Length: 260
Image 1 (cartoon, rainbow, N blue to C red):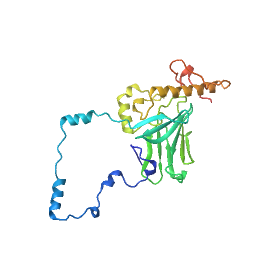
Image 2: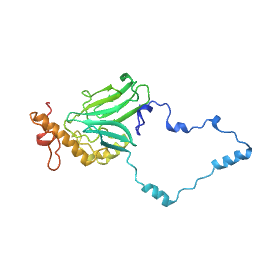
Image 3: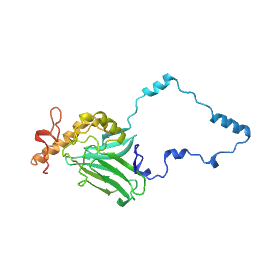
Image 4: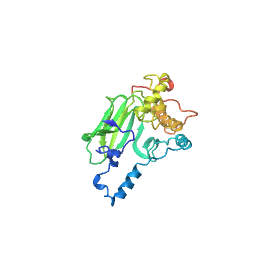
């Protein structure tokens, strides 16, 4: 299977034809010319050469900024849940805890059985698709490493729920996936000397749909409160606030515990 770079709709993941095939013309659909003159006119028109754009016009097109196609935004009703969209289309919802990242994907149909769905979870990649088709709906690197053997998924109520266990407990994930492999490779190659292997701090410049700094602080606040509640079960930290920047829940005060 090959990855869909543009997140084709899940209900079209099994389509046998691509968009470019729709441009093929059936000879039966071409109207017969009324006379030989009409035929000559059509041939002359199709063989005409389109003049090249002027240098100034080409420069104007090149200077046009590329629109942002992927975006992560807050869920309007569920606290600490986020929605990843691509071209204004919802791809999945997700949330995280100290322990894991949970992804919610709408199945293509409520009648699809779990046995027809493919979910492959490796230490650094997530693949989601349907059996019998040559394309995955999702096939991308995860934000950081996961414990594949401890991760799981299930189908319930027309929603595919995927639970990715973080390799680095307490780490703040700013997105679930890192985008197309080619963009990740280009960004990580240019700054490979700055990235430390296995330190749980990936190069976020390569991540697709990464959140803004303010949202990252909100995520860290939620994880810090979860950590405080875990370490001090007799207290209620739901309304606790932080003065200044929220600390990293993974490394704060000697680091998060792994025995919970």
